[in-house]
Length: 161
Image (cartoon, rainbow, N blue to C red; front, side):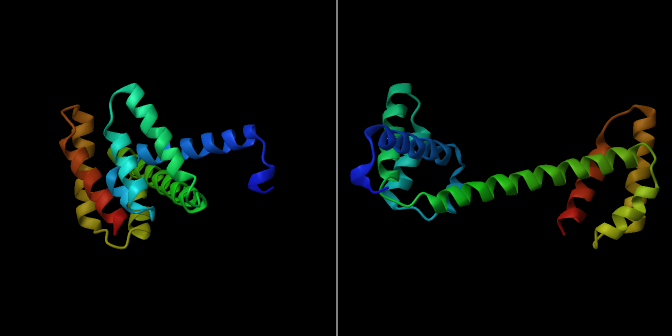
């Protein structure tokens, strides 16, 4: 349907959707925002909206962002936001996997060492075994979490390689 035949309600709904998309841009960090290919005036408006604390001023600035959003194609922004969400989800899953590995090694699951060595190319058997042993002794003694943190950092390092 072309612009002339759209009802006012449809136009308002589309404007609200673009404003919501603008709000998602405002919620991004500055380095994430740099990855977007958007006009400079829109980028500046998004940054100002992120810094604005007053409710009324923020609302007006978000409406301005929505107005600027009407001048560009929102599809690339939708796609980039989706990629960011998927990337964050993958990072969370990887983080949880590493936490699980650490907890299992801490409890004495030595079979997991073989799996980690097979999955992570940069893993060193001796170092991994030593860190797991230290974390297990610390866990059984109920002393602290220093060795567990060191083991976690090492697992994270080899998983990122």
